[in-house]
Length: 483
Image (cartoon, rainbow, N blue to C red; front, side, top):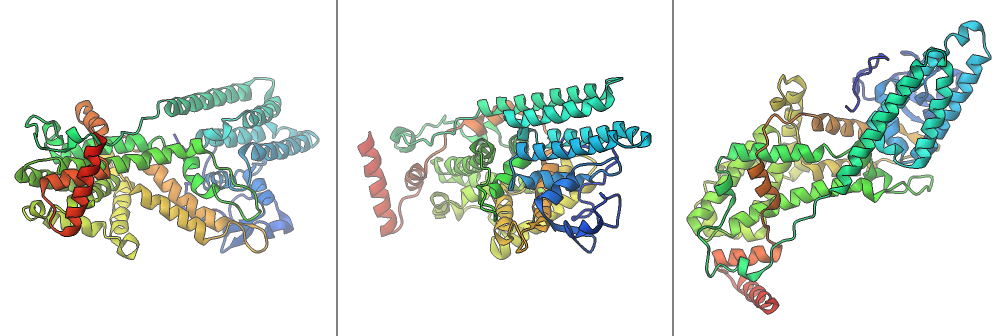
C-alpha cells in the first residue's frame, strides 16, 4: 500500500507540515557550514542543488529522512534525473558511508547492521511507492548492486538478505500486475454512426435503455463510483508527474516522458468523455417527449447522488453530457423538466472564480473523509481534468530552478502534496457491491458521435431556426450518402 507506515523505522506523518524538518530541528545529516545548500526558510526546506537533495535522501547511521521528504524528492527527481541515474548516485553514497564505517572504530563497525537496515528501508519505500521506476534493466541492475553491498553488512545470519529477497519479489509482482493491466487495455468504444440505428423513422418500442437496466438513481451512482474507483486505482504518482516531466527543465535536459505512463491518464479521461456521450445518447435517442423528460430527470437525480457520495468526476461528466448542444437544444423537453435540482448542481460546478463552489465542496468532502469511520464516508473522487490542470498550472507558474541554479523545492512540495491527497483518496475500498449487469451496460452500451447526436436530436425535436434547418439538412444528406 502506498506510503504505508513502516514497522521497522519510525516515521514522520506524511505532510504533517508541508515543508518537512529544519536544519536545527529533528535528526538531520551533519552538513556543518554547508547548511546554505540546501536552503531553509522558517525551518522549511525550500531549495537546494540536486547533489545536496540526494544527500538528504540517503540515510546515515544517525539519520533517516522523514517520509514526506522521501516521497516528494523521489516524485520530483525524475524531472531532473533518470531513476537509474539517481539509484547509481544513491549507491555511491551508500558505498562511501559503508567503507567509512568499516574503517572506523569497533563501535562504528557495530553500527553497520543499523546502517544497512536504514538503507533497506529506503529501498523498500522506493520500490513500494514507485515500482515503475524499476521497469528497465538499468534500474534493476543498480538496485541489485546496492542490495549486494548492503547484504555484506550482515552475512552471518542472513536477515538482510532475506528482507532484500522479499522486497525484490514484491517489486517484481507489482511490475507484473501493472504490465498485465497495460496488456488488457480497453478498446475505446466507437461512436455509432449507422443511419439505421439513428434515424428513428421506425422506432423500436423494445429498445433497451439505461432505465430498463437500472431505474434507481442511487444504485446507478454507486455503480458509477465503483467504476471510478476501479479506474483511478490504476493511476500512479509517476503517471501524474508526467504532466511536469514531459516539459523541458531549466537545465535544458529533455524531460523523461514515457507514453506508456500517460496511458492511464488518457484512459481515465476517455471514461469521462464516454460517460458524457452516453448520457447525451440516452436522452437524444428517446422518441417520446414524456419519456425523454423522465430520462433527463433521472440523470439529474443520478448526478445529485454522485455529489452526495463524493463522486464529483461522474457528476461533472453527467452535467457535461446534458449541456452538450444536441441535448441543450431540446427546449420542449426541458420545459417539462423540474430544473430546480439541476440548477443546484450547475451552481456547484459553476466555472467562475476558478470553480470556487466546486473547490469548496471538494474541501468539505476531503475533511469528511479524514474523520470518517466508514469507507462510504471516505469517498472523494475529484473532477480529474481540473485536478490535472491544477498540477499543470502549478508547474507553469513556478520555475523548476531558481536564479542561483538550485532546484525550487518549494514548488515540488506543493505538487507532491496535491498528488499525495489524490493517492490517499484512490486507496479507499469501494463499499458498494458490483452489479455486473449495470456496469456492463455503462461500459459497453452504444454511444453516438457528435454528428449522430445532432441527427437524433433533430429527429426528436425538429429544427427551430434557419441555422438549425441548414445543419439538419446537411447532416441528413451526408448520412444518407454514406449508406
